[in-house]
Length: 229
Ligand code: SF4
Image 1 (cartoon, rainbow, N blue to C red):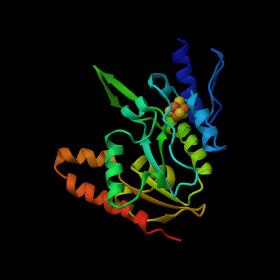
Image 2 (image 1 turned 30 degrees about the vertical axis):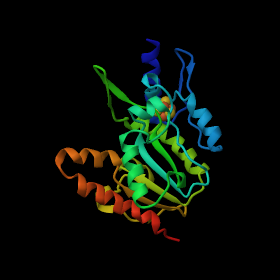
Image 3 (image 1 turned 120 degrees about the vertical axis):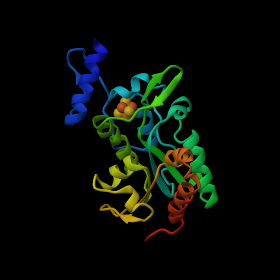
Image 4 (image 1 turned 90 degrees about the vertical axis):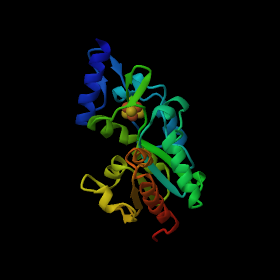
């Protein structure tokens, strides 16, 4: 009963932008912070209870990398292996990303890498944990951690992997497949580039379009070698 009440309170509060507090159960939850150094944000995010996703996850998967990194790269949600290890992009999509970056001579150390959603949301099917999309309220509230990372990582160059990250950075009207692979100036003076999420390249194996999908992904990432001023 208490958990159900807390879930409802968290969803309503997230939708309305309120501080999350369930009065009937007296269970306060922590509001994501948007200011502070990366270590401060990481510590605070460890105990985040601002939406219900944390409950079934193992741990928070915060971003990884230096505040002085040349690029800030944004994925979608922590996945199964990220949840177990506690680091972003350590699963199959991360390995494909590493391979693509290595092919264009860009090191992971050049990049601060993170996700919009910092806990793994899934549905249990037997022994398998199937990825489940975060809802609009969860995206809204969790992206405040991302805002904190935007503030703490000083680079002028953002790279969005997939539709969710692109929508957060460019807005709802952004059309990923039509506008991918080019640097676009943001209002705050930064530049951002969007491409597909590496997991979509992996999924292309099933339909037989893997080579084309991988080549397109690498071609988009290659723009990281030609930065606008
Ligand atoms: S998914 Fe995000 S907002 Fe929800 S509990 Fe985890 S860190 Fe907090």
